[in-house]
Length: 338
Image 1 (spheres, one colour):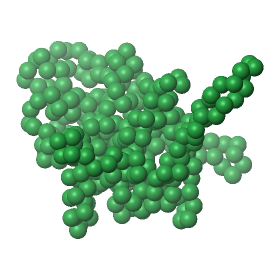
Image 2 (spheres, one colour; image 1 turned 120 degrees about the horizontal axis):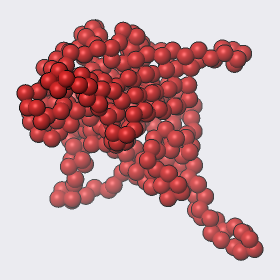
Image 3 (cartoon, helix red, strand yellow; image 1 turned 180 degrees about the horizontal axis):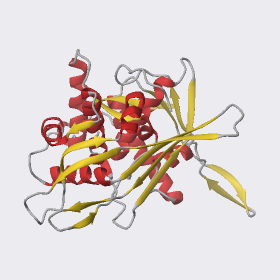
């Protein structure tokens, strides 16, 4: 077996370093020099174990559901009334890295201010400019505004199912994320992105966030902001590894990993491609989350088997990952586990 950190590419010539590799290297160097507690973003533990869509599923897809163990996520695309056009405008499902970044930012502001009402306009502008390093205008800022609008009008439900000792009864705790928002329309009538001045998280979600928020290093999140998959892997490991008992390990099969992270990859060739893409994202996460102890059980060599009277080579499936107890990326808050 080989530790996944050993799968990171060897040192390359400076000219061959990609912008993503450069950002990862610079983040690691800053972390080494940093002597203070890093700035935190937060994600709800249910969204650390499930995920929003990686890519735009299209305007025709109005519902998104994910399940992992005893936690559930359901997102229904919504619509908002446009006072200028005097009609409701449909919005698609939130998706991609920017939807995750916006939601983590909303969680951060609510927890720091201890208030479910968030003044979005100034705080998100500063987050976009100062933290993400995006200009005041341009396609990226427009995309963030679009994802905020999609999050605002979507019906996002998080649930956890508990069974009693006899296993004959299930209870479901269900919360919605956003309760209300104050929308104003842009002056340019051709621009269909609605931009909020305030957002109210639902009181149920805010109370759940106080108990179940998982702290993440803001610099790590920014360095991984190019990839929904990498962000989801990082969030998952941040909430999972430190809960494993000391001197114990947990095996996660590739089947389970595909079920959790493999949206869009189907069939034998698709699953094989998923393993390749997942390993790239995981190597980037482990370059930042240096305390994570994750072992990749390598694919076994093909074996010759008898099939219909003939000898054929058959590739044995890759085993999966072994997770060991690890320190979280930042000192943990005391929060229960779903």
